[in-house]
Length: 167
Image 1: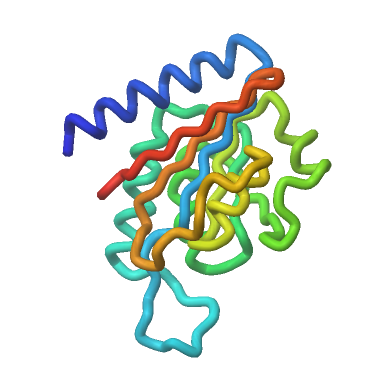
Image 2: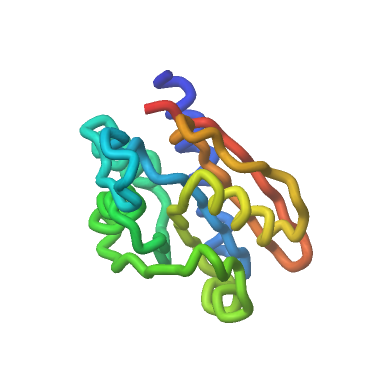
């Protein structure tokens, strides 16, 4: 596990270092951490204790990344997942509409930036697909909170990476 974490830090550092040298846009996409499931009628649950630990661990995973912006949907579980990283980077969380993904305003305001986007099991892969302009990823299984999608855009080159980060 520590070996994978170390390898991930190296990959993220290299990607982030490249982003600072030229006009490269890098998007990091994660799904919210584990949510409370005891009340199936609750459409806006909080994170479980395990989910709160995962959110803290994401901030450690991202410790070497110089994010310019952090986006989240306006739900408790996504906000709670994004908060530790936002606090560690001294950044405000910007809310996005999951029904309006990767529009022209978003593209232009994030061009050349390094951005974290926290979403849901269905919106995160859809958002990545919009950036890629193709249907590459399907919805995430509802018990999977470990996917990290990294999309790097340089000129016309778009490079996606999918990692699984178990905490």
